[in-house]
Length: 400
Image (cartoon, rainbow, N blue to C red):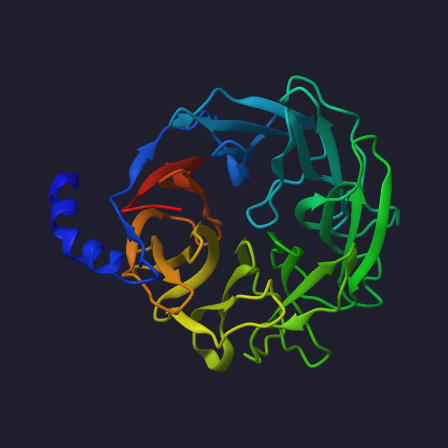
């Protein structure tokens, strides 16, 4: 079915939706986008940028180490690539991804992982600032000051009053104790403030994610109890202080090892969506919960997908009353569908759309809304060579 025929076929649904208070999102067919990433390339990540844009970042291996590269989405396409850093000790992997984020007019922040010793789990987080849209970069600094040869990673960032807020998983107390969740504020001059312990026991290698509400930052992460219950929690930052984390849902997923399957969080004003994967009771399921009070409380979870779902979730706001949710689902052919559906604040779900496929179960598809489109990126593999794939998905009948 071509795009015109698809639009005609969807007109009744669009008209019906337009007559309701909360319009159910309708998505068009995905359109491939060329990225400037070389081959092999690993771990793309997309961050929102001002002026209705986005920034794509990814890693490229070198003979020694790797580089963190980036591209801006403008004029409907990914632009020529820049290089944020080349690091001989860069830790390249499929789960713990670096990023290049816009933090102000012409200002960018890059963060990545770098080995501190010749050991599998001895690496630090490093950061670097650019004040000229990536033409030059500051000397790298670390947001943590413990100096231990342990694991630090799974970083998320947000805008803070005095700089850029960072949160990360911190292994300074391992192996004697468990993984902790910590945060700090980093100023462009490299100085640190607001160093804090957010949670003293969390899952070892599940991604964190942060969104900004009208009341401040809100963080989603996978908690861990002493009896190995690993459910999704959120923590809110109020007046510059992190409040204790609280469970979004009482899934009670008991699992002895880390599932490497973090939550995604998205916000628009006081409306917040958290989406996550759970394997409680040996039943795979992707769930979502909504808050209309900046994360103080959440609705009962909505089932997004179950049979065949393996998680690797993503989320982004569409407009003031709806969100887009993505996840990976096995197609039993050795590949994985990247699926998409919309969810409104009142619990309406759009139909499931497959916007792409990948041969890699551990890829983390990324998505943001740019204008009337959703922009996706993920890692795929062809002829045993990793590459960055990207598509554009129109939002039909879109309005803010």
